[in-house]
Figure 1 (cartoon, one colour):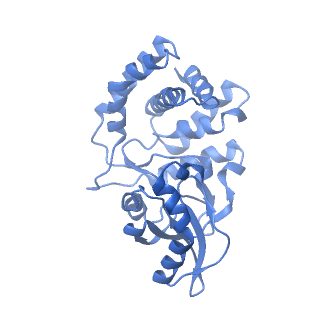
Figure 2 (cartoon, rainbow, N blue to C red):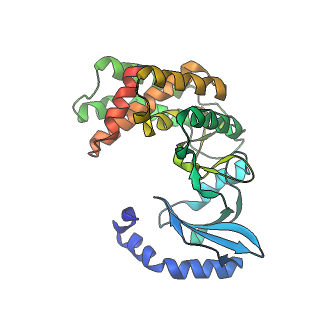
Length: 285
């Protein structure tokens, strides 16, 4: 868990994990039931309570567990892992146990893309009065910042591609009244096999707005599996059809997300992902 060694609070939290797990298990009457696991965002401990199987998720200092649990409560198991309990002040959640040994990453993209599309449709529920950020907010930020960010990293794309991205950001920022829940962190490694449903999302990040917002991440995460740009375009077409989203909006978000990640990645010294973003921009711009 290297990112948590960067500050004193993170290092202290790592030292406290055994005691934190024991205390939370005592409060919720849980028994550890297997080796702990982790990704980049949390520690997950398999647990049981009176024979029922769950996982205990503990987040590091600084994570807003109340905000994270808000989306799980609204989705209520529709396309996502179920939330059974949450304790924001200890950053603990009790979640449905999924099959951590099988993610959508293990499936070919011909399988993964329709699964992602189906989950996007399932998760596109009304948000109502929930106070959450929107995809329109993100697009407005791009309108204000793309030009400066592009210049700051030595203009890594053509001017035409930047202009297209800014124009599309203006269009998406204008639609600020959409009332649809969106997962703002979609990728195959966060889609796990389950008994309750074939596939469910873990660690979703709830936004309001365009359901197709993050399909670009699905593409760049596994772009090396596409030998030809025609295959990338074909996967996009499958997603648009299966998710039942507007083609022009989906294309706009592939361009916006690719431009955003390209500029962010170059500014932080990334080397493997920026070329993937450039490839997506060349295909869709």
